[in-house]
Image 1 (cartoon, rainbow, N blue to C red):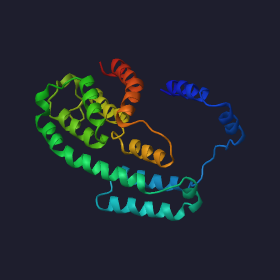
Image 2 (cartoon, helix red, strand yellow):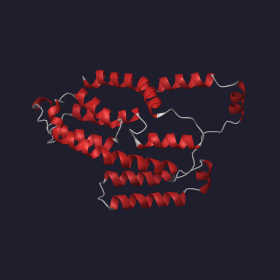
Image 3 (tube, rainbow, N blue to C red):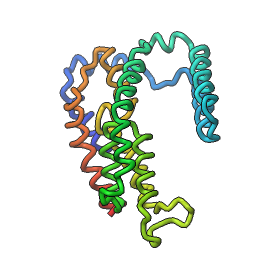
Amino acid sequence: MLFIYYLIDRYFWAKESLETKKWDEKYQIPLSLHGKINFLWLLCIIAIIFFEVKSPYRELAMLALCAISWLFTPKGVREAHKFTFNPIIEVAILFFGIFVTMVPALQILHIHGKDMGITLPWQFFWLTGGLSSFLDNTPTYLVYLSLAESLNLPSEIVLHSGSGISHIILSAISCGAVFMGANTYIGNGPNFMVKVIAEENSIKMPSFFGYIIWSGLILLPVFILATLIFFI
């Protein structure tokens, strides 16, 4: 994928005008990082998740860390990046609607999923990924994890850890849920957020289906390769 990105980047760079290229070379800005203090708050959030802090203390602690980040990050950093809350507000509204409308479908899948004949790792990879493409990866992962636990799989492919799920099926569910969230703008919150941020800065982005064409051409061959190597 990195190689594909390199080729695409070279292609579009070659199409730029000579004037644009000279401007880029003249006004190159050295790579630097500001607001490094925020890594500390990110580590705190990871610690909250790792130590499984219970609700509502988990959410309150995360909100407190957001407030601390806002106070400790220099105002100039946000101004330089034209920071606004609009992207995250749009993402919150969109995903609230998705989660509400998907609850009945997830319940049906949870109850009747075992009647679908899903038993093989590649099936879990693609079905988990397909749902994760239009829903956040966490609820998708939990649904198919519950489905796998209810299958009473043969003992030769089940881990003896009490989970009742083989490592290959658990890997298939995890990879499908995480990787295929990149297939659409709504497969992961950051996808849509980046789109909104780009458009706020007058950068033209593909339409919803235009993005799917791009992602399909690049990602589907990679996923097929991953299936053949790891899940068949």
